[in-house]
Image (cartoon, rainbow, N blue to C red; front, side, top):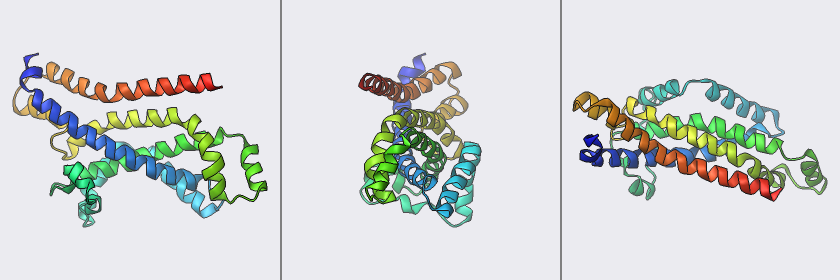
Length: 235
């Protein structure tokens, strides 16, 4: 178990990089998932079909396949995901600005994959809103966008918060795949470096990596429990 103390810096660096990856991916997934959810419930059939096709595709593909296409398909198409080198943002998340694009590829893959589950979580919240609420808003002359923004989503958010949190927790655990697709320095690649390259015993390293992921997932789970309790009391 001495490896946990002697190589604490490696674990800490891997934790920090994985946390950055998860923060960026979760933000992107919430934004994209919200947009796709709007398409899914849009009254315009072609737009609704686009949203349905997106969810059907990414929800039924393994994340490994999505990661593979992001890491190896985008370079073939001539893209290094440079559009993620957003000024100011790349100073906080320095890996966005490096010449090694695999961090950006991992963000794209996790965002695209998780957004499909975020979309369905939001849609389930929307379906939980009584139909009479939307009908009353339409009778008052509100447009679809106004109805969605002012009436449906505020109520749907309360029902969707727990499924959204579960999607984020799943995304944090899924981020472990990033190290196998070229992201150097995260928790999973740190485990590979310590065990395969430096010959450290696997069990202590696995325990250290597990603790790192638990430090990210347990607080989210506790927050979800707290929000769920408050929602039950509010009823």
